[in-house]
Image 1 (cartoon, rainbow, N blue to C red):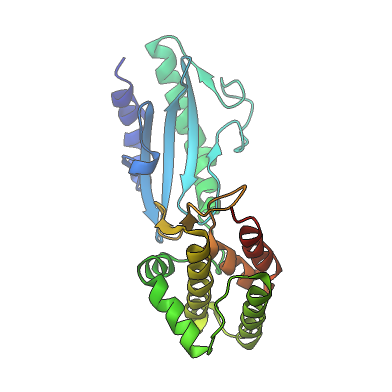
Image 2: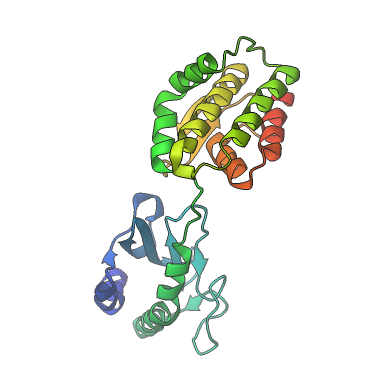
Length: 262
């Protein structure tokens, strides 16, 4: 059964008019997965058909590159009508004719549900980490940290709770000073310097290292000598703190790593 060819012929030729081309990013590709991608205003949108690992069954998935937007599966998190042959989120087949029939149903779902859902899934909040922020942090964390230390005349770098609480008083003051500034107007640079400083101190104390994910907006401090978690996402945490105008969760999360040093 030439599954890929049937998928391209039945679905690919029809959704080409919407800008989709066959192929998925490496992170989403794999054995038993066939998919299509397009880009709309900088957001990648994906439609993928996935073979069940243990039985003759197919899933239909929708995803985007929008920040922290979860993928959706037809018949599961993406609700569809009861007029299809699925059992919850899975379509079973035995013959080639069954496979073709399912692909026709998938095409109908894509056009009647999926395209609209992809539009909704492509909406991002204004205040999120950007690729530029991630790239600058991963390449210049030590430099940004030193700048923050010098600009704020920080002399005490002892990693104890009292000292850290003093640092967070400084962070809170900076948040208040900049609270009326647009996110793009100097705020991103301020957040990067803060998170580089705090991250570098934690990295040295807990012997971790900076790591960039597949998405450059995902920056991780990994292999930290702490329990129960050894990975920390400081860029995500500080941007969320700015969005909420509240550093409490960010501060507590940071202290938790320090308190659980091993």
